[in-house]
Length: 275
Image 1 (cartoon, helix red, strand yellow):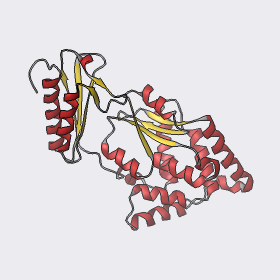
Image 2 (spheres, helix red, strand yellow):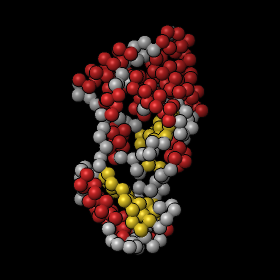
Image 3 (cartoon, helix red, strand yellow):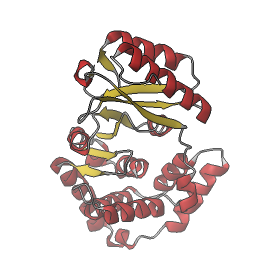
Image 4 (tube, one colour):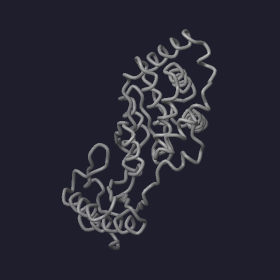
């Protein structure tokens, strides 16, 4: 969905192409997804866990796309974005009323297939399909998405329909969407501590501010693992520290989570049995 919206903004041109766009995730977003989106040239931001924090971060952009790892999310359009998109779409319809007919599906599918045949991935296929549209058609499709998408989080039906629309616009079957990237194996666990308030994080919760020694230990553990990433955050409701780890293999992710959990226990006042 983010790649399709980004490609449409660029293809529509004019005022729409000058809008800022960002994809907002939390630290729990799989690293493979983050890297894949960034590789498509989209700006990726990280926000504190919780839909109210992610939604607020998305509103910093003219067009903000966010979906938490639990599925909560939507696309938000600023008033300026809606005006710009409407301006380009309305001008396109005035110049050629037939632009609203949705013609060109076969051309988009052919462009997407050609991109894949040339060695591109599913994202490149979407970009090629949108590139086969006229700027006016792209603007009209984008305007339709702003109407379809419910900017208030929680509308699963609107989200599903928006994803289906994005697949159709991008000339992509469902299977190609699923194959866009593969999640890295991940593991979550928790460690009981004497006082969770002894741990403080940076605003997006991806790193600790204190204890510094614990963050240093996490950094060292991550360095030893292929595609490794790990972070810890104190629970908001109980004296436990939540651990997240990911790596190139299931075994490596499990081991990284265990190493980090032991570091939490040793350096943050662990209680009970050592992990």
